Image 1 (cartoon, helix red, strand yellow):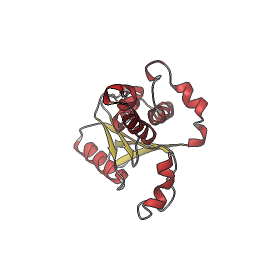
Image 2 (image 1 turned 120 degrees about the vertical axis):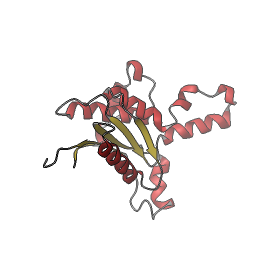
Image 3 (image 1 turned 90 degrees about the horizontal axis):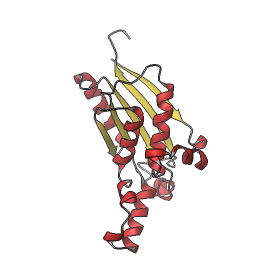
Length: 184
């Protein structure tokens, strides 16, 4: 049996000023997507009734990932040579950067993966979580679903209506999955 605890953040509470306030110390150069992961992890940690085992796993899931940063890197490539490309921007243009930030914030040392894709990555992440828990590889899995609002996500329903029947909205959802004892 798998037990779950879920936290859904209201993107409306994540104003630019509040997000900017999170970017301090080691996190000062985060892009918006990474900052969303940090906000979700920080809030999730405060809501837990007991601490997470450091061996717990983290899976971040997104259909679009850090689009704003990724397109910024592409724009730089078109404007500047490869040698002039910002290493920081490029480093944050991948899904794993946000996963690493969330794992650091949660103090996790278990497996950390980022799953992405347009074809419903959430069911794949749930199945992977179930397998890890059933095999006893990890004591818990933190499943973090992140979507950053961008011009592309606003148009996704028009471009691919069979996959996105509704407009894609910014969302932050964290689910903790633990293997439960029989009868729990």
